[in-house]
Image 1 (spheres, rainbow, N blue to C red):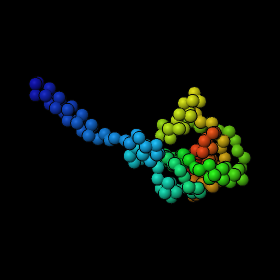
Image 2 (tube, rainbow, N blue to C red):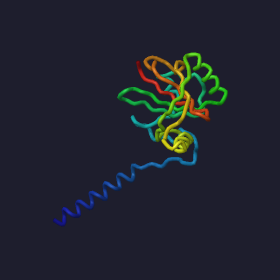
Image 3 (cartoon, rainbow, N blue to C red):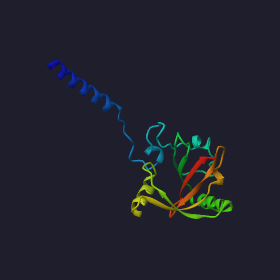
Image 4 (spheres, one colour):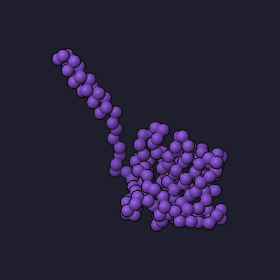
Length: 163
């Protein structure tokens, strides 16, 4: 009986030691999306524009990017920040593909801090935006979706899925 008790204590201590060794530290001083993104796994947000560019077109140079792909549906959500000049050009190009319409987008926990804060200010954890057809980003098989410019900032949220 005492052996079993000590065995349980020893096993608990060993498990706790292993779990604490698996923890990592994140650099919280940097404001870069790349440094806020968790280590790569199938459900983590990513910040590699080249990797995203293998699946969809990225027509403008990004200043900040974070994105996720749902492995089961292959749906992609990407958050971009462009320079004001490129953001305005993107909107002008998108307007040629179809009319703009108001959109309300849910804030995700992996979004940049500025967008999370903006969603908290709204009171309903959503971002007000103007949505456009995402034609400039289409690349087979991702040929359905929209690009939305978040009101008041140069952030865009791209939502694409295969047809």
